[in-house]
Every structure is written in C-alpha cells, then in structure tokens.
Length: 440
Image: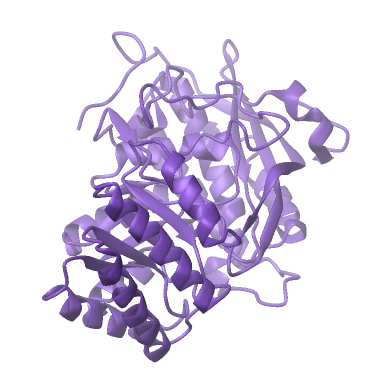
C-alpha cells in the first residue's frame, strides 16, 4: 500500500510530544432540515469536540476529534458521554509520543485506546438500555481515537490513512444520497430525477408504513427503469421488520413490485431484522439468494445494527448471515477498531462487501470516515464521508470536505485528520466546556 506523505519525507520528529491539555466542547448544531427514520426524528447534531494540545518543547500541535453520542445507535446519552470524556481526558494528560518512530507511536495509540476501553467498561451509565460492558461509550472512544490519530499524523506529516497502514486508493466516490423516511412516492420520484448521475444508488429510509413503502419503491423502480438507469435501490429498514418471517414476506412483496416496474439492477436491504438476532438475518439472506437464481435482479442483505466490531463479524461470517456489512466508526469505537474489522472481513469473508456509513455528524467525523475509506483493504460503498457543508448554520471544520469532480473525494492536503476545528464558527453552538469556560 502506498503511504501518502506531505513533502518528500516524513517530518523530522525526534523529540517526545507530550499531551499538555485536552479541552472538551459540548455542542448542539441545529439541522437545516429534519431527517426521519423508522427509529425516530433528528433535528440537530449534538456532540463533543475533543481538542488535544501537545508539544515537544519547540513545536506545538493541536488535534481534534468528534464524539457523537446517539442513544439509538450506541446506546449512549450525552450525559454519559460527557462523564466518560472527562475520565478519558484525565487518563491521557501528560502522556507522550516518542516523536521518532511512526510505527511505535501508532502502536501507542492502540495501547492507549485499550486503556480507555477498560475505563469505559467500568463507567456506570445512566441510560435505561445500556449495551454490554465491552460496548460502553463507543462513540466517546471514537472521538478520542480520532484526536490521537490526528495528533500522530501531524507529528509525522502524514495522513491518518497513512498512520493506519497506508492509502489503498487515491479517491473514493460517494455511493448514494439518502432520503428521509417521511417522503412520499411523488416526492421521491421528483428527487430521484434530480440527483447527480454519479451516484450508483438511491438510498431510502423506510419502515414507517409498509403500504406507503411499497408505493415508494415501485415509484422509484419505475422511474429508474423508464430512464434506462442501471442504478441500484438501497433501503435502510433499521430493524423495522423484526423477524425472518415478516422480513421474507415483505421482501416477497417488494420483489413483485420490482418485477412489475421492470427493475434489473441490485436491491440492497439494510438490516431487515432485529439487531440481536443474527440467525434471523441469515435466514433472510438464504431466501434472497434462492430468489436471485431466477430473478432479473439481486436482493443484497446488509448488516448494520448487528455490526459493531470483530466479534460481531465473526458471528455473521460463521452463519453466512449477510452479503454486505456497514462499518460505523462510532460503533467500532474508532478508526483503529474499524480498520481491524475491515481486515478481518477481507481475510475471512472475501465475498462480503464493505460499506462505510455515517450518521448525523459534521465534516470533522465525515473527514475521519474519508481517512478510513482510503485505508481499508476493501471498500464497496461509502456514504460516511458525505460532505455536510449545507447541513448546519455553521461549519465546524476549518477545511471542509469538497468534491474534486462529480461526487468524488480525495485525501485532504493537510496531514493528520486533514482539518482543524473552526473555533469562531462553533462558539455560538457550544453549550458547555471542560475545563469550565475554556475555549482552546
């Protein structure tokens, strides 16, 4: 794999870099448009920016990470994330990177993150539905993983993708634009007509109303078939069909609608069954593979909520439960764990497709997703790095993501994460700081 460097060689980093301060900035950015899924409605992006300052006595570096606690994604409340972030901060203060060996300092990030995972497992959460101890505070862990990798990348003048092992690709294309679950068939038809031709799929949140969903899918399939586009339809069910019998029954109806519309591309179905029931998803996958033997299209089953980390991947691989998986950095607990997940899948399930997804986030996390997309040994779909330029009244990233052509993204020109935090832009939306009243 090629390692992308800034300049002809690594930055001459020879002195130890010590973490001198970490500032936590709790924020809430209102969304310009409400987004609806079968799980709920989102009208804002709450989170915590983690701002790390380190120095070797001569050079000072500031890095950033983003914590995105989501009760419906990681079973993590903002209150618990704030308490966890303070505990992680206390653990990391005064720790040092060698500054003279990228492999050594990359390994140090992994070791430090293991320490934070242990702290997370010992936290007493206030949520009524806590995950297992090993899964506690994954989004909070992700924000610190991001900030530490950003710091190491800046120390050596390389991208996070390089810190993770090297860039496997020079650019990535955003695979789809995602439509809210509250749009009706007519609205979707109009939006499908207007989306960029470079998108390979139309991604739709469904699961609110079965009859309405069938009408939506028929309308979209008919539009795509009439225009002669071999574009895929991708539905995110968010567990709405619960069990295998209901999922298979509903997919059989979807199958009839697709046939009637003359649809001949792929139909991706994301998480049709309950998160905890991987065996049910495996049953659905077996049925859709049987249908594919005679249908003019293929139904692809993708694991989302069921996929957190390598342990889940092992279960999915053992049961041959999915054709594709969604890697979310917040659920894995950061970029290092996400990379390990991708490497495991390539080694043990080479036919399973890999998708890097996102959630309600800013360009800080979207840029982290882009770094992961560049480094993964396999990448089939990506919406996680989607630029959020027009999503909020302020842009937190000092170097926002921007397409180079079509819906294509390249690595940022800056080392580390590739962007800093625009402190002026986010100040009106900061609700709390730690240490108190401290802006970096």
